[in-house]
Length: 201
Image (cartoon, rainbow, N blue to C red):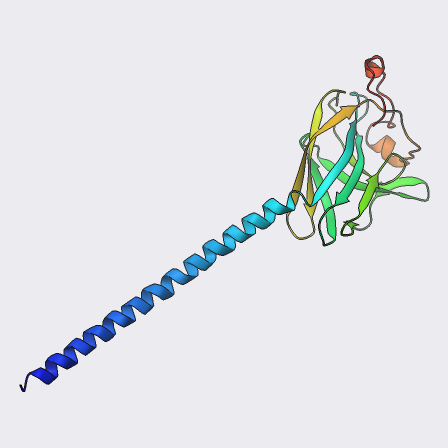
């Protein structure tokens, strides 16, 4: 009987140790599960964002080797319930310079601030108005080809729009000022493709 008390204490100590071990294991696994859940949630958010912005009726203007810049037109539509702000873009052409352009006093220039499309609204990118400029690109961009665009957003995410058609288009009411001389000529019609029916949007 004198030994019963120490044995009981030992058993209680062992049980306490097991309990602490279990708590310790639970504390270690919980952050991992939380991290995994956060990563899954972030992945779902990015997947959902892909449909938040569309570039409808988008087209890339065809150009020849004599012109080192081209433009992209279409209608950006924000399908989400929050504003989307575009801070820049890239294309599958990998041109050294890509700019969001606006009209200022009748002359095209790089936008002075990011482009924000309010929730549920659209913004037209058109010849003679706001549009995307791909610059310092000497290779031809031929009618019938396609170009992918990646929009970089203010929140650090990006949305890709694939397969924009390249078409021969008449020049709009566009005055690029000194840009035309700096980047290889006026924006105009690529006469090489006039006979193939690739006109307009």
